[in-house]
Length: 468
Image (cartoon, rainbow, N blue to C red; front, side, top):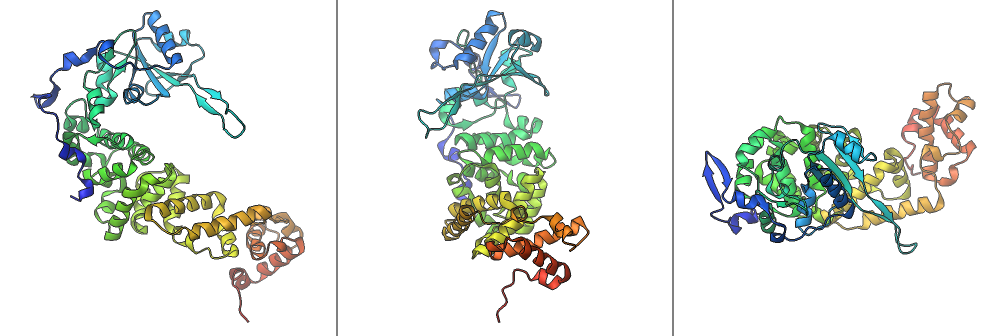
């Protein structure tokens, strides 16, 4: 195994004596003592005032209620929480009576959402306004708190708190946070066989928090990763995208490679046939991706452009991306070399017109990210920035909508009777303003449209500079 894929957890060692093996499952030895902690035994968790008021309102009405999940995990880690979850014995009908302004979000399990965010204006004109407060989701707790936390999957997510009742940590989540360890609530092999997507979730959590996988979790993923090969690719894609925009995406990608899960992401044929150049590029991405801005489509582009074209195309097809993202990624594989050869304003304008401003911006920003990852010179990027600045400063025409004529003008001039052909000719004559922005004149453009309508060779060679 490559050195970069050997996790720190293997050398740190694991705490001994915390578990007993019973019927093939891992059992927490001091379960009962950890189940309920008195408030004075744990550090005080600071609740958002509106969330706390909501909790107290529910408690006053006789409904047992706790904050649970990610918000508690973040607060235990010493981080602020903005997205809050309450679990309560109140039914959705009860919630609607108590909080009539709450939004009911229908899904597999209905949730009431209450938005407590508010805008805070900057201190002066140069400081932008921002949102503060909390977004609260309230879930009905069908059974007791114990059963609710059992479904959380990982110890660090299986904590709950009610300042007026108890802090519940039945699986040692606070201890694992101190150790920076991702550990499952029960035997990981059994969990991953029952819920294979938890394997991707485990790596994603490690990437988000810079944690390590518990040795048993890591080994269980290596044994069971193939269970995800026929799993819902949409669920896999969601976990991958969340991993890529995390603070430690490089670590997460390394873990995907070390556990076998990279085959789940890219496909077995792609993963097993990566060339030496592919592997070198992939490891460079792992090493430096965290230095780039955590933009979803951009970091996806960094991952897929590390592959050769053929393997990149196949990997992109596997995860069923939305059409916009798919087009961005496929174009990136085709164009990340070409974008470096825009040597003058004419070739730049032609490229901009061909791909459109939105796609160009994506490719340009991906190129900037690649410069960081692969430690490339910045002169090509600076040249493109200069070309764009000149266009914007001088309001130079680049696209058909910038022209002084449109398809109707071409038809009215008698050049063609077909609207489709008129649009085609309009797309050809834009080359005239790419050569010289002063050519954006009605007579010059109509003359060019007439020439290109009659002379296919002239149309095909419209960007060629002939030498006498």
